[in-house]
Structures are given as C-alpha cells and as structure tokens.
Length: 323
Image (cartoon, rainbow, N blue to C red; front, side, top):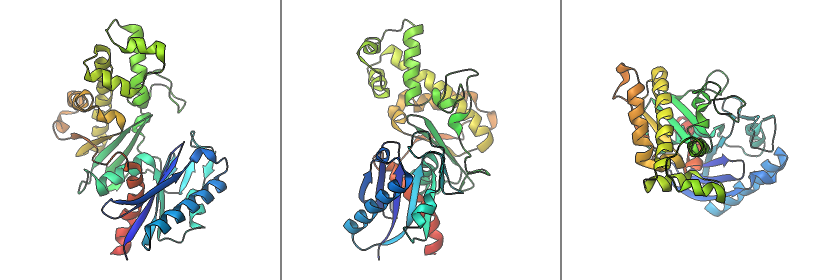
C-alpha cells in the first residue's frame, strides 16, 4: 500500500493541509480558516474533519504520520507557545490533542522555518547536505539551522532565531518587543520600511514616492520598481542585502554551513538581493570561511513549500520506521 505523510501549515489566516508522497508529490490538498476558531478544541475538530475528508478523497493509503509547521512551535513539547498571530493564546498542546484523534506512528510539530529547513533537506537543494542555514524571508525573518545532519533546537526547542539577532542598537521596533532585530530590516515588511525611510531622507528619484499618497507600498511593488531601475527601489534592496549579508557573515562564524538557502517572496528578487547578499557576506566574513559558503535560492516549490516542509518532519522520522 502506498505510504503518505500529512503535512499541516498553520498560518494566522489559514491552515493548509496536504497529503504528500515520499518524493514530494502532493496528492490532494485542502485547508481550514485558522482565524475562524477562537478555541483550540473547535479548531482541532475542524482540522480532523478536513484531514479525514482529504484521506477519503485520496483513497486507501498507509498514513505514516502528521507533520505540523506552526508559529512558535516547540518540537520537544509538541506545543504552540504564545503565538502572537493566533487566536489560541498561551501554551497549546496541539500534538497531544491530535494524538487523541489519530493513531499514527509519527505526529510531530515544529516552527514553520524549521519545517522549511527539513523540507529543503528532504525535497530541495540541501539533499545530502549536513550543514546549512535556511532563511525564510516573509512578513518576518525565520530561520532553521542544520548541523551534522540534525536541526538545532537548543535545550528548550527554540534555537535558531537568526531574525531576532539585534543588528542595530535602539533600531526599529520589532514585534517581539525589542528594537533593532534583523527581521525589522530584512523581510518583506523591513524592505518596505526601508523604502519609507529613503523617501523621507533622500532625494533619490522614484515612482514609489507617488504611491505613498495612493496607499501602502508592498515588497512586490518595490521589486517591480527595481526591475525598471528605479533608483530608490534599487537602493532599498542594496541596504537590505548589506544588512542581511553582514548578519549571515556572523552566522557563518558559529555554524560553518556549506550553504545558506533563502526562501520567500523577497528571495525571488534574484540579482537585487541574492547576488548582493553574497557580496556583502564575503566582504564581512572571517578569512577562513571566505568563498566556502554558497548563498542559494530555495529549491522548494513556492505553492507547496509550507506543506512539504511540514510533511518532511514525518518522512525524516518514518525512515527509521520503514527501515
């Protein structure tokens, strides 16, 4: 019988569910609106109903387990802890609640960036790679650190928060409550904040100056302007790449990865981000690490990446079971 894993990506707005084969093919997918549920028990009940619907649609399969990528997910405890963008507050024992409803060999949970790192190792560009960093550039900046073939969780399950390294003393306010965190400069929202700063502090010509009157500027708009050689947009990407490159140079000093993978909408900026990040990283890295670390766009397919990352938690554990 064909073996599959269930991958769940829990977002603040929606939870996406996919049934995934070992080769990364998503057989069927669906989801539920996370924000529609104020209580976790009602959410878990809806999650179960959607999973069972997808299983019926897929036909008879051997389910090896459920993998979950979630904000503030604790791998050790199987809990979501104080996630600011979810209705469920405090510590939510999600794995225990799912184990009450599903009798599968593997039910694992971790944060979404860690899930993406394992997904890169199982399905993407990090196959066969034992040491690498995964940087997810979305609304915030997430990260997963893999060393000696294992994801680094630390003693409490929350290791690897590169996005919350302070890069500017008394800098931009971060959602975590501190100031100057990397993600406030190097994320989709950070890029837009940089654009607004440049509008106010420089005379660089830009079509984005007019957009301020029309509504919010998005990172996509900044990218499209940069493609057209808009001077202010190009400078915004340069500043973002400089800060990220310096931060990655520091990360290399304590992880010595073979590669750093960049994932997310901002990473799609190509020459405007990745090439410049690599340049600034090389300018700031210790001599012993120079020209040893690649900066690579993630090979995970954008549409299914989150679900693949979550399901990879199962496949990583299932290899021991199958063997």
